[in-house]
Image (cartoon, rainbow, N blue to C red; front, side, top):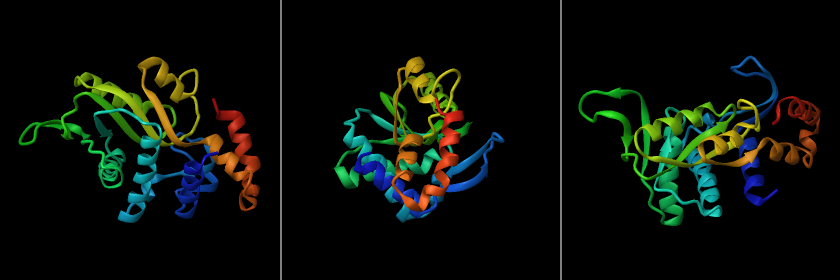
Length: 212
């Protein structure tokens, strides 16, 4: 596992973005872990989180015209990543995000910020079923821009329709999905951390049932 992945996992553990225990997800599924970037709710943590995204962008030499963050969690992510690209790498990329409902007066329309044109980099926190990223792809495509790349902090490596969601998005929409870490990365990290050994069995059982 590379240094970026290790440092990011340590960051998520230090700030309880990644936690282990017994959790009930929105779907009703029982999970031995919980991941929530919404806890990056101050300037320090949000800046650090955005720098991890930017390091992946630079590391992979990704080519795009603007950063798009879906409402609501994608809004602070897109804005902070646009800022971090400039301050850390002198890369200037505009950002935009969507409203839940189009505005009919003043600054009208569905999007706020840069008008979506050219190739889009979609930013989200996680990919599970893939629905959030697919919604973004369809929204941007309908407006005339080209969704090209999606980046998430964490790929849960779970099923979309028939296969892993991130793979299905590539196959159906020709949008590459990158992640800072995957579920496999977390388990590999746990295997080398004695403090997390007690959770390892449950994580492996979860993977055997839900990973695709």
